[in-house]
Length: 280
Image (tube, rainbow, N blue to C red; front, side, top):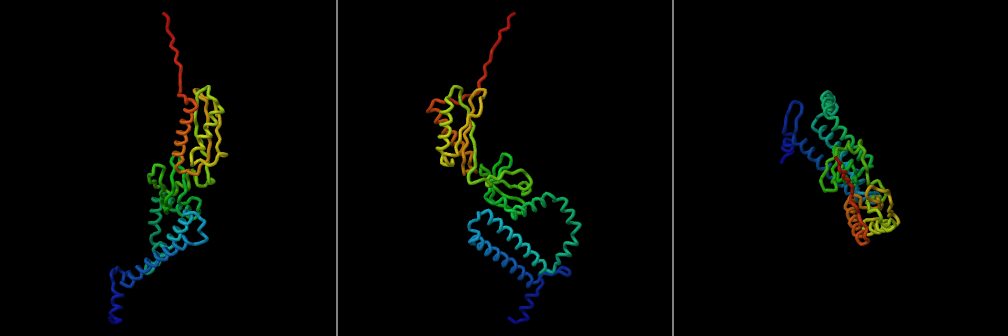
């Protein structure tokens, strides 16, 4: 195959539209840019995962760094591809300024989520694997995207969360606690029960569960005199934050079993009704 034939193949116009055209050579360059970008990002990802300086960081921090490099890499690749096609970025932005303003007004929330996603990745305070609480819903983050993040709640249901909600709303990040977090269980017993025995049973019952952290951290309290019961609470530390409701349920079952062994009754609300007979 002669040099002229190769040049003809490379200069063959696949698309010809005014001053813009797509030749075989340009198509080859575009494919090469995509392949090289993908390969470089893959190598960078493997290097970050194996780097000694990052080995002590959690998976969420590494994921955020990888995501930032991915967005930067593909942004550069797209700019290079547009330049290869002969499209000037400055002219494109200038010509579409009015359109961008109109689109921007209609997509304010989308841009808000987009900027929030960048803040999440750069700031690093919220990471993949963190356990977040939105009102009454507790979610473990599985992925942080540019516009939305994805997580699963305690019922293993996938939740899509707009990034602006994580940034702007009041969110509890349980993963920012120490290695253990304190929880409590409230319970009432019948009047006449031995208070000291109840406290002893509550503390020993919590200690029976394998996910409760340390005897010295368990504390049972006599809280108040209720309408139908003496009210107590047992406080304990646990590392199993995401499945803590299951831990609480197990401890409640242990408490009931130990109460039954010691003849301690859990009362139900009672009300005395007096009937007054009307005398004619």
